Structures are given as C-alpha cells and as structure tokens.
Image 1: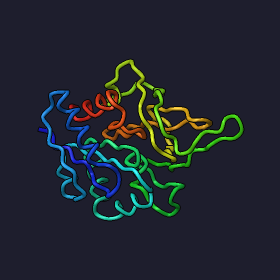
Image 2: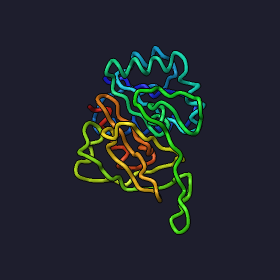
Image 3: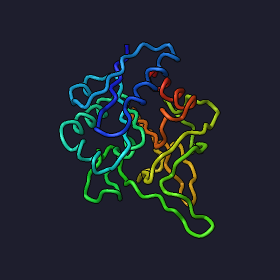
Image 4: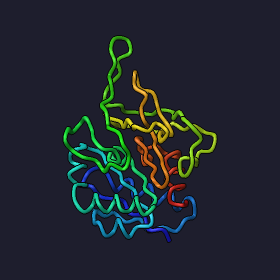
Length: 214
C-alpha cells in the first residue's frame, strides 16, 4: 500500500486535494493511504509526496525555512516521487518576484515571475483564472504521460509562474495573453503542475491516479 503524504504548509484547501487523490487511487484500483501532515518525519517516511498550496510565496517560504523544507529536499534527493501543485511547483525554484528575499527549495534553478497583463487589445486579467488546453513541449513521461495523445483542458488560478533556467524541464505550457505560462515541469522523480488537478475534473483525476499508481 502506497503511503501518500499531502504536505500541509498551512495554506490552501488540502481537503479537496486529499479527496481527489483518494478517489483517483480508487478509480485506478490502487491501494493507498493518504495522510495530511506538516511533520518532517512523515515526509521522510512517505512513499510519495504531494505538495499543494494556494497563497503567498513568502508564507510558503516561511513554512519551508526549517526542518520541513530540509525534509522535502532530502526526500527529493532520496528519489521519492514528488508532485507539486500550484504553489507546490513554485516552491521548487529559488526565488519569486512576489516575495523578494524569500527563498524557495532550490530544487530547480530559476525564478517565479509575475504574469504580464499585456496592453491595448491584448490585455488580459491577472490573476489568470479558468480553463486552458495544455500545449506539450515534448513527449511527457511519468504521470504526465497518463493522458496519452490527448492534450486536456485543466484549471488555473494564479498570478505568477515559474521561469526555469533549464527550459528542458518544461513539459507543458499554456498561453495567457502575452504570457507563455509554465504549466508543468518534470525531472527524474519530481513532477509539478501550475494548474489544479483537484479542480480539473476527469483530466485531473487521471493525472493523480497515474502518480499514485506509478
């Protein structure tokens, strides 16, 4: 039985993520135990780690500044499967324009940048809220390959997105006005998405089910 720890950073609707993971595992016929915790020892004892989050990067960085952040880095180093959702993706990077001086986990080099609303006829609303079809940048692997040849619509709520120094880790993007938004990144045991699988209906459950089953 896979023990999936949903990491509690003190922000976001974690219960909806827990329910979605549990349902996705049941749909796949995978035996799993889904546990919500902000305890470093639970992170290190997990089989798989899900880091969701909605809110401010500075609050996220504060939650990760101590033993919890070190436990997440160590879990990644050990090769434990990591799935980041929204702020759980942004936290993988070094810095964010939202919170100058606050440090992310630094798993990936790069920064989190504010979305550009554009100007004139091309102006768009920020935050970016709503459904977009993913644009795959290369053949996905792992959980992100669960959709096969489909490019699903998924649901976004955010004002910032990650800009990696290594563009090869970007698996999928979407377009919002003048922005090419980093929608999904992956390298080795780390997968993260800017959209919300728990709000993306069937497409989101497919992704979560594939992550738990892998």
